Length: 244
Image (tube, rainbow, N blue to C red; front, side, top):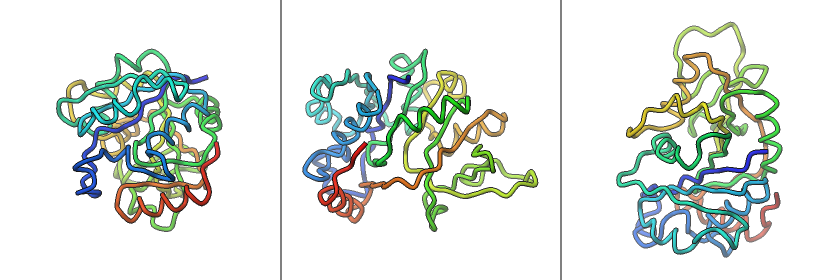
């Protein structure tokens, strides 16, 4: 069973400004609680014991709110970034806290109503270096298109790698911000750099023919990346609290 996870929480949340000038995006209230509290509950319900949270913008407020994670039934550690390293660079910097065993990575501004254990079981059964949760949606390309073959193997991410198709019909999905990684993923990440998982790490893996899979789910999903989506998430979770 996977017991470690990382929550990406270092960003400035510029699309939520000016609210995020005072409060970091992961602490925005959703259904009467900080978004990050829902994410930690989700991870704990999925069997996670240890969580790393990366911090930069107003990170001290997150550290004060979450503390050592004990009240969530977790052991929480923090990875402070002197400059924001983006998603991939942030994960790479946290390698000393994550390395040596598989781990989950979750965005700090979105949440799937999904039993995490089912995603982890899928990942372990397929045996790839990485698995992404993906959702069908008519506007998938506007979220960064993830394309799978008939065996749920990821073949293209945001149009990369380019080149002729392999004669396969690929299915397009959006990515709602949840991954599972094997510890070998760190070999595909350069230290001390700023880079994204979706636009840099995954294309690098695909070009090298590394096995990456997509776990297809229609689970309810909320995000809080804009004022409109934050308001919608708050309404949705208030009316129907998430269950894992």
